[in-house]
Amino acid sequence: MPGGRITQQERQRIASGLADGLAYAEIARRLDRPTSTVTREVMRNGGPTTYRPEPAHRAAERRARRRKRIAPLVDEAPVQPYGRDAEAVQAFEEMYATAMMASGMPLMMARVLTSLTLADSGTLTAQELARRLQVSPASVSKAIAFLDDQGMVRRERDERRRERYTVDDEIWYRSMMVSVRSTAELVEITRQGVGVLGPGTPAAARLEGVARFLDFVAEAIARAAEQARDILRTSPGPGASPEVAEGPPGVAPEAAKGPTGPPPS
Image (cartoon, rainbow, N blue to C red; front, side, top):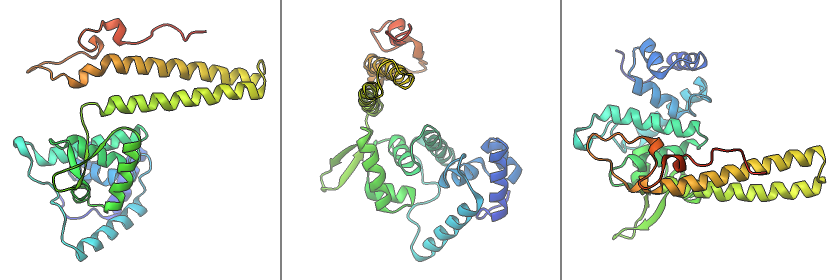
């Protein structure tokens, strides 16, 4: 298995593999590289849909020059607690961040949220995040501002007056509710357009349909999030494999699924 940095030719082959729809593991097998190496390379450079070999190679050269000027901030695979496989944890962290990016989250925000989520403490300082991700504090600050707006992190001060960024059991609930409020605002604006375009006109009818759809979806998400909130606070027993369809404790399966009929007229 070859070692050392990824070459420009290998980056070209990674890009070709992504274009052909190959999985990271298959691309890595063809390069005789660990899957985690390919995953990290793609995730660092925009994700599978925007990866380009030339910009990726230039970025790698810039990182290499920076490492020559300063001592490395973190090990490639830091020692993990609980006897975890360090390389497996690192590969999973990168795949998790890539999945968040695929759902629409920007790269740095996905990396920061992933680091916080996978830290056993659930809390890190800006300096700790910068060291873990090998990025500037300014990049961390920008990502935190975005995540804070989405209700996905909390800012706290520790005993040394350092600002810490924390994720807790309810970050996804709060994020869902932020999305619901944003959707409700969009519904209100959309219905204003119905009046502007004239009720009964084709464009107004289209807008009214959009407003009804979004209103129904937002209400369903809010209701489901409230019903499922207790799941976030519940630790499954040893060996338990809770079924999502069962819903949170005390909520009937039908209720946990949310509305099943058509949107109200």
